[in-house]
Structures are given as C-alpha cells and as structure tokens.
Image 1 (spheres, rainbow, N blue to C red):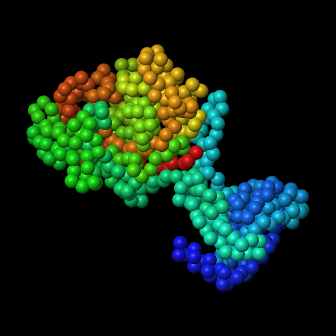
Image 2: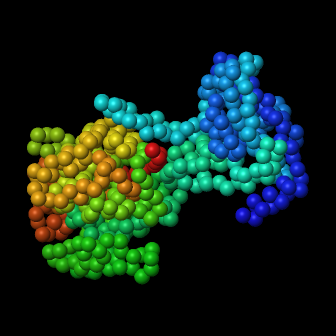
Image 3: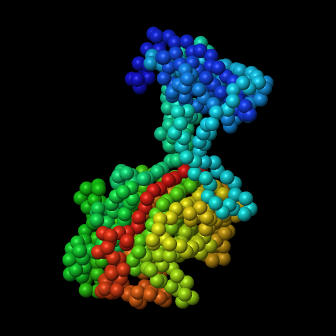
Length: 533
C-alpha cells in the first residue's frame, strides 16, 4: 500500500508522456507492437482486442508485458492472431518508468498492409481448457501447458488512470489464486497459467504436508502406525520416500505384546489425527499385539484442495511382501455424508509382493496397479466395482506417470499417457449408475438435491500419499497364492497382527532392509502437478 501511494505521488510530480507505439501487420499472419526505448522505460504492457471496443483499462483479448528492449524498442509480436486489412485494433498501453506508471488509453488503429516479416516466436502459454468428451473418450491425456520463459509475458499491468494523455497507474494485482485477472497478472506463470499446485520436493514442506498420526489402520485394521519421523518419511534428491520400519526396532520386540502407545500428543504438531478404531492409544497383550510396523501418511487437507483439474504424479511403487502403497483423494468436506457418500478417488494402489496371484493365476503384485472411485449412499453399499481398473507393468522397478483428469463431464485415468479408465455416470448421475434402488431398496439418495451428474465428485478434494501394510479388509484375499510363502494371517482372525509379526522371517527379508538403505521397500514420488480446469 505504501509503495502504491509513493508511486502515485511521484508520478503526479514527474509527468511522463506516453508515446504512440508503432503497430504493423506481420506476413503471413500476426501483429507487431513496438514502443521506443528512451532510456526511462523499464516495462511496456500492451492490451488489445480485434474488432471489439476496449474502454479505459479493461482487459483485452490479448494482454502482454514486455520487460526488455530489442534494437531500441520494446517489441511484442503475436503470430497467432489473424488481423486483416481494415480490421480495427482497439488497445491501451501501460508504460512503467523509474518515476511511475503511465497510461495511453482508448486507442484504435486500422490495420493496413503488412510490412514486417514474422520472427520466430514462442506462442503465449494458455491455461488448460475443459474439453467436452466425445462419444469415445480420448486415449491420451490433455497436453500439459509449459510456462513460457521469454521476455514477453502476459501482462501484469492495469489499474486506473487519467485518460489517453498519460496518468497515474495504481496496480492492484490478484495473481495469487487461479483464475487470475489477465489485465494485471503474468498469465504464463503459476497459478495464472492453470498450474495451481506443484511439488518437486526441494524440501519437505510441513506447512504443505501434514502427517497423520494414528494407529487406526485406515478402517481396514492395517498393521502400521502412522508417524512423523524422518526414518519413515523424508526427502532426498527431489524425491519423497515413505519407508516402512519395524516397531520392534523402536521399542523392542517384547513391547508389542505388553507396551502402551499413547499418541494423543501434547502440542498441535503431535496431536493424534484419528481416534477411531483405538487409533490414539493402544496396549499390547499376548493375543492382541500392537501394530508391528511404522510408516507414514501425509495429506494436504489444511493447505490445498481443488475441484476439477488434472493431476500428474511421477512415482515408483515399493517392493516387499504385504506392502500397500496409495496415492489418492478424499473430500475436504463431507458434503453428502460419511464415506462413501461423499466419494473417494484413488489415483493408484498397488501391492508390494513380487509373486502374488489369484486362483486363475493372474498376478496382483507389484507388477499391477489399480485406479478406483468409491461412492455409495452408505457403508456397505459402495459402487466401486463399476469404477475400478487394474493394469500391469513394471511399477516396482521403474518410475511411471499416473494421471487423473477430472471435470464436470467425467473422470479419466491415464498411465504414462495411455487411458486406463474412463468414468461417465450418464445424465442421471451415480445413483442410477449404481442401481441403488435395486441393491439398497428404501435407501435415501444422498445426491438427490444436486443437478450435477458427477455428484459426489463435484466438491473440493485433497491429496493423500501413504504406505500401509497388510490389513483384514480383503485387499489381500486369503485365497490368493503368494510365491514367497502363504499369507501369514487370516482376514477373519482376531489375532491378525500377532500372526503377521510371528511370520516375520517369511516377509521381512523381501523388504531388503540391508540393501540400498531399505529404500526398495519405500514408496517414492518425484513430482506432482495439479492443473485447474
């Protein structure tokens, strides 16, 4: 605020007269603006429309900043616009000098024959646009826009002024959240170009990523404790690692059958995040062992959530028996009720086993991954069987790019650019798609008041990354065959954690804790990008 006041006062005392820019057509197509470099100018912003009136400092169809001079001029050339002889170019110019900002507004130029040959330029980057799916959805994900790094950028100019003979500019940018004001923001830079979230793991930003602290097992009676510990979650070489370790290495083996873990915490950073299923405090016994593994689950619930967009994640799955990695999304608010009424989007889940097969011999280990939507009126009614797909590949040995593309018309999953699953519930929405009138007769439709066919997937969702172990919900079926030895627990057993731990000699060697710092058993994530739609 002080800077803007100083700029205004300085500008009124030291007047600068904005000159007319030179405007010419390019051959075979395009337009060129050139403003002379008189030694005082540091930036020239061009705002213009073709055959459309442009009053005052309204945003034009095209808005660009030029922050460096070439051969004595601040030049902007646009070879993507089609301007013909006789077309009217309405424009205004914002010139920034060492003494302030000055305007030339309400200008018109009638196009004449081109006199300048087109240069080789990079077209301005535009934010991703929402495409309406064809009858057969595309098999390739939408192209990722790449922000331009040239000296010509979308405009950060704008404001109010005194008219066509130059005057004071008061810039009031609104460029920190998408969508941005094209008249005041650089539209080639995040978030204005649509890139609303990017994680390259330059550091482990705990303001962005909250650790969940709980023994609850995700409602699946999984075998891990989720901690905030750099042994289990850390960043190195621009990569996130979530690595499992043994609880016995922390507390001693006898502790599993006799100790007490209290996760209630004494400060905000230590508070238990999920008390359900005895998640915040447990005591071990001879039959009811404490969770034998420590791992991590991180989320963006307090820092980032979005509605509609495209997500690209580059990741490698862990290798090791009974490991369960996942990258997924939950609703920030349960707008339609508790799970699964408000939805869940699983970008990917996998199993760490090297040789895990069903009774038909189909592999479901670390050479397989699945993408799934969960939705239904209430548990146990969940229509996920209609919206899930498993594919095969080298997920435990190589990084791959996993993509979710989500808009008001459907949700599509891709693996390395190839479509794996497309979900469109139809015009009647997920209630009819799930046939819940038949499977849950007499149940109320939690989405009945919404006219959006994508409900419950029409709310903000946040990102979760975690590595679980085991569990009794059936993700590891009892009847499947594991090449490294039989599954060491039964999903109906009341002593599943004890049974799992006592078979440690069969599964723990597959985690290769003594090789490569145990990171073969880690879920590894290189980068995450979220583009708005």
